[in-house]
Length: 322
Image 1 (tube, rainbow, N blue to C red):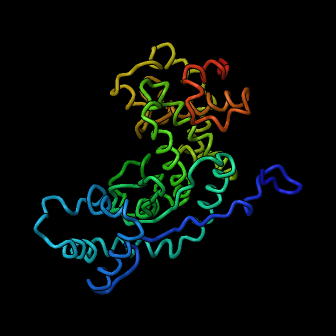
Image 2 (image 1 turned 30 degrees about the horizontal axis):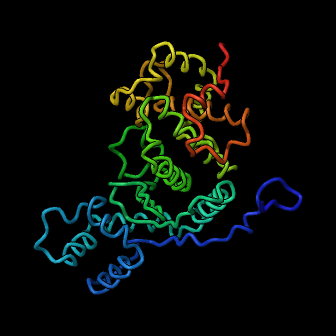
Image 3 (image 1 turned 180 degrees about the horizontal axis):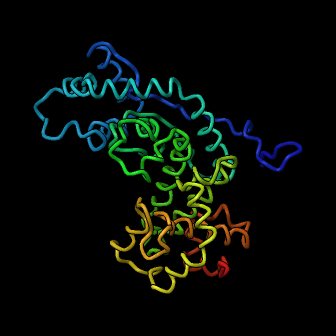
């Protein structure tokens, strides 16, 4: 399918589509009339996102039933702090051509590997640090104000392990990963229950993202530093053993699961230097081991064909003891 002449990879030029790349409230409008026109256009082009944007994403319309919508939007849009944030985004990015190219190529790879799947449109929106990725039924949005650089004063209150990932290099992969995560969770019957379910679901996301971003470093895909990745490779057996021996793999306790799945400076119960979400990295290793033994099953990764227990068993995953 769409094989490149003289090569083994897909010919992305044979997979044409237009992601859209709308910019939502990132443009500069000088007065409320211009903003009103822009909001009308926004509501027409994004009828699914527009109510969410003013509601859960920005929280503008809580207890504001009697206030005209344009007044609410104007107070937000022309707020000096919001204006300064918008200026910071536009000053850093200028345009999104680099990111747009990477995102489009990743979605072309996704279309190549999963021809039956929907390929989303993509938009950029000013999120006010409330959200990073928003996935809709046919679109995915990303907030570039979350990627102004680790040295930005906007993130000075964050710990190092979070601030480090505020670099624009993470933006393209976060778009695809956000979309994949929503696809994984779309089927309620596939919702993860145990820790094993969770780490394999997100391990699948990393496996697909790796193939859709074949030239991107694993540090960007995982969010780990190179030192953390090296540690994981050197201590894979110890980290895996800690989950198996403590019988955490099949726990359904959300408190325990959240400790392994949420952003954190380290992973509890593992060697002290283990980064947060190291269990997800182990899930990725299991999925890759499974695919090495079952290469034709890549297109079925997100189907119900394989249970998490079956993936683990068929993977033959068994990290070597140091």
